[in-house]
Image (cartoon, rainbow, N blue to C red; front, side):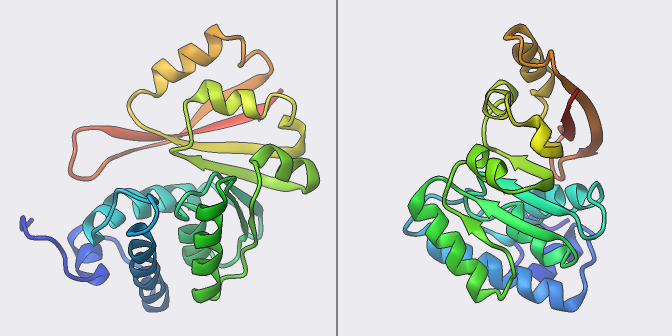
Length: 214
């Protein structure tokens, strides 16, 4: 693998041996460019080249997509700059994808990107707990929004409002699980490792944890 950075999304996809339909690849590249334009004004992402986008954001989103059934109603918790919600909306157009972000400026940026990408995904400027209280979802997805204990605290009284929560985590997930357990936050929660996969370019492993109320 060359050390030089990929100039296009297509180059990065080939570098990491990932295939996307042409229309999805074109839309994903457009999303990257929109995201990076917004990132100059707001702190939305640290992944500001195609290689990092593919090896981190796209890989995580692809792994999540394998755990979601056709036509499911999915909410991206604290979407930030739109990962994984916008990416899932691009690669899985069958999903009824919604996004929420409680920080107004970030939500506005994501709303603009969703509109320019012509995605049918509503963006809620609210906390996820309030969104799930008002609407029903099959699955929630969460990435880089906080440690497990914090996620469990948010949804402590809301597990009955959705089927499961899928959380993308890095190598520290075992420590996070222990901390959540010590705080008594897993007493009424079933937690399982739903997927594990290597983080490209590193010696580390990412996991997707499935949490659901008992």
